[in-house]
Image (tube, helix red, strand yellow):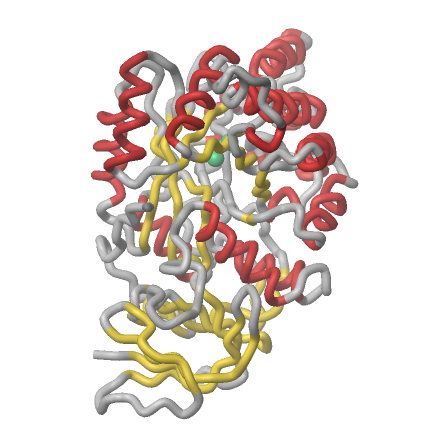
Length: 469
Ligand code: URP
Ligand code: ZN
Ligand code: ZN
């Protein structure tokens, strides 16, 4: 049975108008004023509400095995929380262990993801390199619709790569025409700083941030940018120009030092895209001073930055220099997971939840403050991710033929964020107490109402794998 949203204020990345949207069989079938719809069609009144394309979170880690734990939202609970917050598609990361086959890891993640309530795609992390890894990269790119590879320049000794491996991954991706996404921090230098601090008895959560300073993120961002050029260099017997470099997407960029490296590269003509996350826009490193180990809830990598970086990122977002806002959703419970690092910040599992509040935070602190327009809001929370990761216009658009993934946002609503009321399976919310302007009133996933006025009606396994082409 079909669904019609009547009289909503439709907002896309380049338009705003009032109309009805008729959906059937999971797809948008018609858009227009006073649409005639078949008898029996479910009607949702959109008057006074914005109708946005469903949010796309391009950076999540559901049930990720990491630092001896497993992140506490699985694909069902994490996507359900996303739906409650207006996110209808995620791109998660397959992360093989060092020496594990990419294909084996793919099977593990694909199996876990079958329980998702929302649609999902994957990036493939490359955590080591061999001839077989190269073949596996080619295989997942050509046959599995996994068109973006991820490298971790941090986490040395675990999933992080060295520079030789990094150059090899860039090279294979370049031959394939795939995108490389990168977590930029100088892994070896972080380990050296961690050990120096720990050796001096500095073991509380706040030292996590001190061990990963912005200049080490800036260094790694600049390094991957320069090495991306090697992937093109000498291919035709000629030196490569910057514009021919392997395209990059820098994940969870947090600081001025990294953004400046990106600006320099773009001035040379290099193709570098940037993602940031609400926590890097809205929090500063004072969070690490919280008493009673509460700072551990904010232990993530890169860490929350000192005051000043946030405004720099907001400016980059509003002038279009940052393409996407994702979450890096990777929750660990304070009570029985973060506590592993009670006596040593190096053992606190890195990560926090964010999928549920991303859209409302960006509306409240972006649109309602005048930092970004409604169109930019849609662009950074949905459309750009769809375009960059080859899902557009199936996703990220409100157009006939697009998937019927829609969010009705009530600008008159309000909410206060709290771990007591959120749906994420974690006992802390890093945005605890934040006041929200407006609220996600209804979320439509694949043509079906899955969230309405506080009622979550998600279905385990209803999400589909999005094979990118
Ligand atoms: O602290 C974080 N970010 N944990 C998840 C893994 C990553 O680096 O994205
Ligand atoms: Zn990362
Ligand atoms: Zn991540």
